[in-house]
Image 1 (cartoon, rainbow, N blue to C red):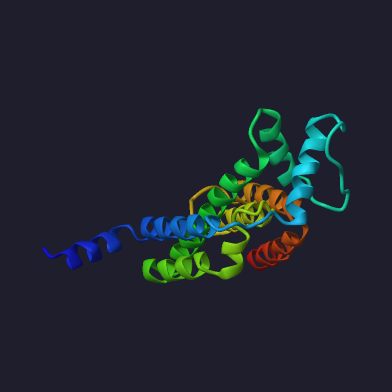
Image 2: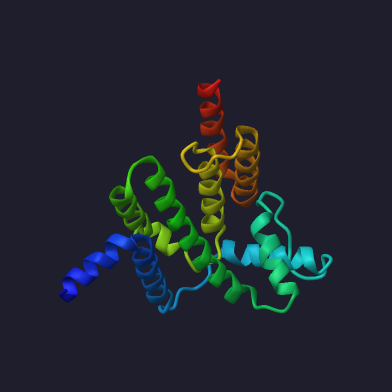
Length: 196
């Protein structure tokens, strides 16, 4: 068996693993450049410090969702640097979102379309740019996709009320991470209306 045949066989068996490895490489390469944190990133860190220091450090912006600052503040409270842990969590959440795109697309279509969709999604410029600058987008997208996965009847055999509960929970957490993610609720309500 030639090297090309072995590579093709490995791709056929593990397309998601290859896409995730390639996506991780692209993100690490992107993060190796000096990318300063944006204002929003500093606000999320300050909000987390504000919550976990009993209002002695940081500041609060009431119009921002609070789930992402809670996570950053928790890790700051137990001794981690929020900028470093936030970058690591961004990478983990973005890779999880890529995996969820693959799984959802595979359940609806097939493996080859799922691999193509996950690859295109992973290389979207805005998705790469938002990784590592501590914005709430990777976490919100991951929670939203997880909520959609729970709705798919092809994904699992759990009872419908249980699927709706976990879907609603994930979508609500997505909304509490980034308010525009509330658009997912419209599609889920539409789906619920079509089934009844």
